[in-house]
Amino acid sequence: MKKNFIILAIDTSCDETAAAVTADDRVISNVVSSQVELHRKYGGVVPIIAQRAHRERVGPVIQEALKRAFPKILNTTYHIPDTIDAIAVTQGPGLAIALEIGIAKAKELSRKTQKPLIAVNHMEGHLLSSFAKNAKGNGPFSVIKPKFPILGLLVSGGHTQLVLMKDFCQFKLLGETLDDAAGEAFDKLAKMLDLGYPGGPIVSELAKKGDPNKYPLPIPMQKSKDLNFSFSGLKTAALYLIKQLNEKGIKNYHYDICASFEKSLVAALMIKLEMAIQRYHPKQIVLGGGVVNNLKLRTGVRKVAKKYHLSPFLPYSKNLDTDNAAMIGIAAYYKANEGKFVNVLVALDRLPNLNF
Image (tube, rainbow, N blue to C red; front, side, top):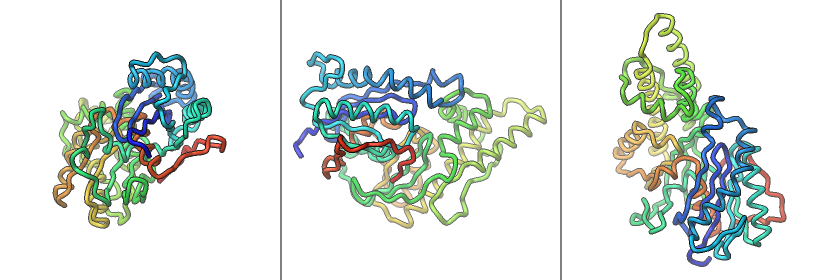
C-alpha cells in the first residue's frame, strides 16, 4: 500500500455527526457536529431525533472535513478530491437508525468516486485512538513503538471493555459490562440528582469538591473471578442512598455522593484492570472512550500500571476520546494495510450490537 494512504472517514454511531480525513496514522482534519442541545430536554439521546440530525448534517460535516484537509481545493457539494484513496464508515455498535445514515452516505460516495470502502467497528476506533498522530506526525507512539500484546481499557457512555491487542487487527475481548456501562452509570446518577444532561462530566466535576469516603458505596464485581463489569448494583445503591437522605431532610449532599460514587466505580475498573494485567502480561496499556477524561480514572490507571512497570497511553487530544471520525480513519488505515475492504456492491448493513 502506498505511503500517505488518505481516508475520508464517517461516524454516525450515536448523537455526534462526524467526518475526518486521515493520512496513514495521521489526523489531517476532524469535524464533529454535536447534538447535545437537541437531546438535552429529554435527558438522553432520542434515536429518531438523532437520525434526523445525522441526515441533515452528514453532508455539510463531510464537506467541512474535506475543506480543512484540502484548503486549496474549491469544494462543491460532495466533491471528493482524487487524492482520497478510500472511504471508511462506522458499521457498529451504536443506534441502528443512526448508523444507517453514515453507511448510506459512505456507500453513495464510494459508488460515485469508485473509491474502496472500509467498514469499521466503533470500539476498535476507540481502542486505536491512542495510536493516532497529529498532522505533523506527533502522538503517544511517535517515538515509542507499539509492543504487543497491548491491553486496552475502553470506557465510554455505552461500553466498558477490556481488550487484548495481539496486533493491530487481532483482538480478543477479555471482559465487558453485563449491564450499564461506566459512562451510562455516571449519567444515571446525574439524572437521580437532577444535574442536567449530559451528566457524566458534571458528576466528575462535582466529585472534585466532595468527600469520597462520606458515603461508602459497594464496589461492583470485586469478588468475581472473570473480567466483566457491572454497575447496575452501584446505581441502585446510590438511588436508595439519595432517597434516604431526602427523607431525612439532609441537604447539600451532591458533592459527597458524586465523589463516593466515582470512587467505587473507578475502584471496580482498577480491580479488573489489574486482574487482566496479571493474567495476560501486556507490554503496554492504552485507554479509549470519553470517560477516560475522568481525572480519578486516569490517576488510578497510572497507579496500577506503575505497579507492573507499565505506562498507559492516551490519545494526543481529548477530541479523540469522545465519539469522532478521526479514530475511525485510523482504524481503517490498519484494516487497509491488511486488505480488509468491503465490496460496495455487496450489502453493507448496520450492526448495532457489533463486538470484537
